[in-house]
Image (cartoon, one colour):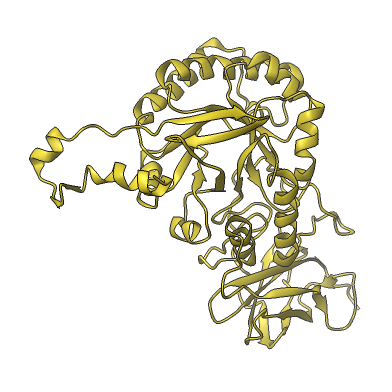
Length: 440
């Protein structure tokens, strides 16, 4: 029985019995939902994950939107950052399994892991969620927290790991059917601490971006001998890229990102004997320095070319119609200047070189937005969405656009969206500095 078949059978109890519609009496007498038995097996120097005894390599995505498109791309699992029965029910309808997040307050949000009252309240909340959801057929594993240690000193992190162990032990007393992990911000010496302080963990989840190819070597360096999974991976982060002369991070185009996703996956996941799979980030959309940086979809739901790349990695085949691509020149000023610093209220002309992989016609859309990528948010903390500046686009034709700069000084970003007739899209953006005009 495949995973999808198993999930379908589990769902049938609430829909039909013996080929007839379910009745109220059936609902009263039907057996309660049976949890999937998920185990980690070690054999021949390799770790594997099984669901009901069948091999299950995680081809997953972080986020619970567009589950239909995830299945079409060859995905089999979603990861959440908090617990939700609704997410489990939705995943079950699509035959997907869920790495269920158990929210823990991170140290950077002023959580005090010496405060026993706080720890008991948080622990009780986590274990209550486990008790309520442990028998759901779509549950794959538990993930305790997400980057709880990020930006914490080692002394504070040691207290975090001790609490993670207490929660992991308690979960195993409640639920014997699902592995338990915690999710880290990258690798490092923390792996040694977790190995010593968290023996109840079955594996570790690692969020890694620009350095993902180094993960297998780092695990070996720090003596981690249990399995791992990549719980987030994506493009080079804003903390890893080059910056403009005035300090703004420069975002890669979606074409550059797509190549980077593939390289990172092939180096950190594919063929690694201790790896149980991965979750690509983000299967949806959010503002994090920009509205395109880590997102596989635009806010309007259009899929970027990175979705095509994940389809190839998961299924071995490219989709029949692929998204357009952006050439190496990216967005550039028509007059050849490269400083990208302009007077307030001035008009400037920009171009982009792009093409459709099947040779079809492409459409280029543009917008200009205020830039807040120098904000202090970190670790995926909330950032408010930024709307396009009204009337900034004066004229757009073919691959060129004329932009009017804002009347006030500040940072902006010019975005280009290149789409084909299927609605798939490639993206690029250009940081711009607007200065007050010098009086004549």
